[in-house]
Length: 348
Image (cartoon, rainbow, N blue to C red; front, side, top):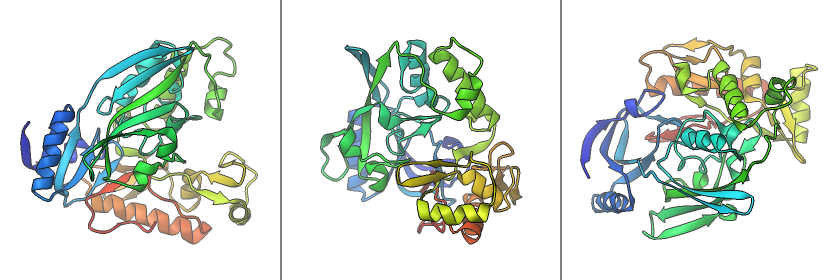
């Protein structure tokens, strides 16, 4: 196992910005992981786990510690009644697993097609899209406790999943996820819970999971939300805010529109489209600020227009947060993980 010093990280992230890692190691199995963690412990180094770099913004000063590149890849499966149980190495590519599941008529994650990143990153943010969330099919995760140096198993309940969050996200740098186990349904017809997909298939009677996957990829690409779109970004930079009914009532009086496609009611709360608020605050698709900008396809997607610095992307994100809050009194928070900053760089 080779240890690199002062390793540039920009080419390992989809934003294509970042400084260097003081130390950098690739791990392909648990033995590599133990060696890497022992190196960090002996040298009193902070640790950051890097997957595909698709949901991170690393500071211009880089990471003053050890970056561990997760390349633990394996796949085990077993049948259980009407389900197939998959245990997947955390370094596996997420979308490759979705492709495999769709091709084998295993229902449960086809709407999560096109999400870049690794399996290990999926439970951290409880990834979700087009009516599905990881938590719907999650069984357990095998993790390594970076404090006690013991391997543990996290059940679905242990993970404390919520909208784009989990116990892992609330306690960063505590655990290294080794594998994730999912339960997918065998030979179940696609369920379309999202309006875009319902419209896509409204005139089609017969379609399967592969068709749904193709539809999701087509919709995501039209919104510039795939790596293949050629944009230097991390996808959705902000999460959709969830507010109380009283807060929503105040917000709606400020919006003054008859449209209803910018919010989604739950039992006690309302999820609001951050993209809608961003555009209403004056930031149109294609907006530019220096070398950072907003995607011409989707206003949730911040992009590196050329050789932008992380600080330029942060400045744009702060400006968006500030104006949205000034206009609507709603906090929009980042979905992207911010790494290597000496202090939290955003307003919220």
